[in-house]
Image (cartoon, rainbow, N blue to C red; front, top):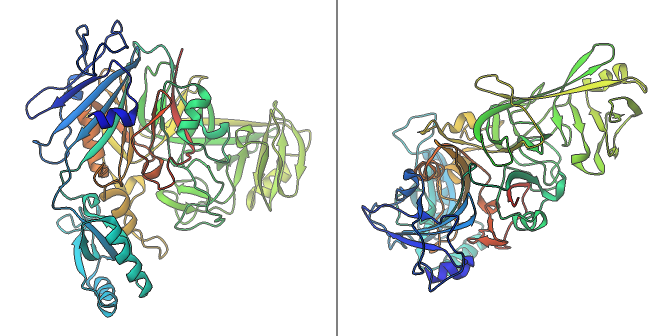
Length: 561
């Protein structure tokens, strides 16, 4: 425990509780508790503590029930609590290995194995930790073709270099991350927000205050003076790609789903996917819902046109789920960029000072919606108190016909609950962060990987089963958000890709952990190298990227009064 406390920089007043089989869990410091130490952590005198919600006291459902689990709890502010959890131990059954390929059919596997044998290695097949969600459910999704069992990462890396030199594809993996039964270990952090007692503000923050570019959660927390923060939703990591396909394309930092900041709709929804909605400063009324967005423009002569995008490059719909004539489909597809040749995209000051460039047509609206300029291409300055409408394909003729200089256009923006059709009010206090998949609904596991964009089905020849295995079935760093039956907000980060420190979580494990922490509704947020929690200007846990904390697209801030 002392190592963890040193790593996290825990302040005096932390309560350390070791959980063993059959015991209940920890408690949260009361408002009157002194936050200076009178001895070592866990030994100082303190008044009676107020229990956390009973469900949050349950041991985490990770590995055998008898595994050791330790929780360290501290109050950050009234109504804001941080819980650091260490569970499990290194398993003697897990090891480093080199993966040469992945296959679903005997022919695919035999081809990879033949290449491995020809290079002088002995291949083996390791099954995935789950089936194809479309069925059959009694067979694994596929198998990884692997070589070797290594005690250290260095030895596995050397084997990888040797295999690569012989023309083989090779990647180093640790079997504790495969998704099968393991003893861990796991390292997790939880923020619990009680809106009835929290006097600060819970809100989303866009990286650097604009869509282009990214910023670490640490930097956003420092810039805003946050008490605590966690990373937010999916976004584009700029790769230079400018065409649709089985990758992320578009502006670096572009949010890959709905984003609302201070009531301003910044990015459209990946329709029907879940999101975290924070309607008030305290977090009261926070919910997890599947959302849709609909943005339209109406001209003075009564003509109406669907606006297909917000604050992004035309023709590049990250994670798909778009509207209009999106191709190859309009349902969600994680880490795939769909296209649309007939787009009308609105660009607001949230995109920054310079708009996306390209062929097409563009009109400039002032704050009142009056057309002040037209242009036979896209790009240039974004008005500080206005909007650009950028058209491609059939939208070009619509703008030329209905958006002449001096005419007035009216933009209408609506966010609706995709399940009930009810409109979601947007006020100056509203924040929305995109996520997926949906983890919990009404205290029941609600996983639907196909609906939420993780179908293993190939898209226009692009193989997707390996993405489903790597992203969904295998263990990774995770971030999740949810709400309890009494309206508290639970924010979780789990370290991963750090064998010996933390194995990470599968998506089903993430749902189970959120339920064990007391959440009844929950959504997965962006994870992997994006996972980050900040408490008191200190990064909690260990980032999985070799370069350290990854710059993200947005984050959730817990600000002081």
